[in-house]
Length: 125
Image (cartoon, rainbow, N blue to C red; front, side, top):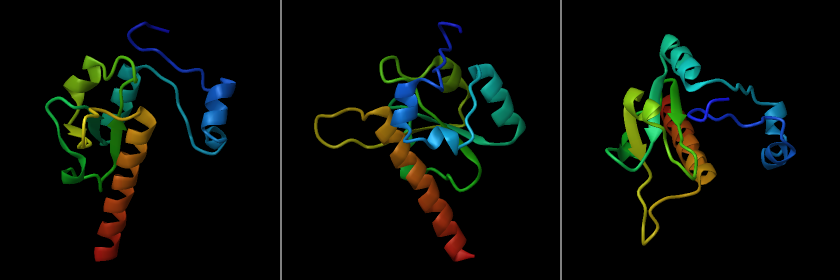
């Protein structure tokens, strides 16, 4: 495990409990950023990074086609590796004094937006 690319123990009891068992029903992979990027690029996925800097609002971003949304850690944020290689940078607009959300909340909001866009696209067909 590299300090620049930490891994989570997928079978840590806390992670399993937090996932409500989804770990056992959703395909999950652990790899280095370089390996993930190579796979995503090879398979033609759009790579979006969730970040505040140099970004556009998420609902103005097309997520209908195959898309990977990359998040940083809550304590250190997104690595420069992903910032430099992303096709676009997106953000969730914040109201009030808060400037960011918990990473799991952000992931849920952006995943549901991708589903919403895909459902809307399907209903137009």
